[in-house]
Image 1 (spheres, rainbow, N blue to C red):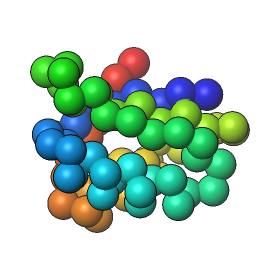
Image 2: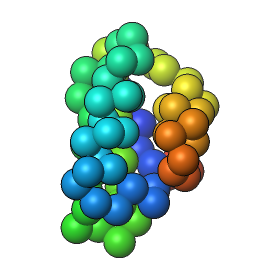
Image 3: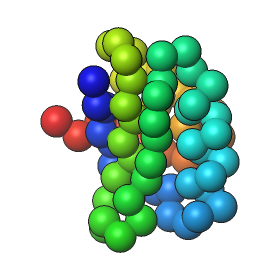
Length: 70
């Protein structure tokens, strides 16, 4: 499963911090942020369905924002 968000994560340092934190969530297999996309798209790949609110809350706690793209 892939969950996709638009975000304000806009540089490599922020990407690394957020990805490390999201990877701590059980079931998350891969995380990346497309800095070349104007929406700084955050993609989270997981082995089973993780509620998007879990990802949102993790990002929000770190001082960033995101919203799920459908």
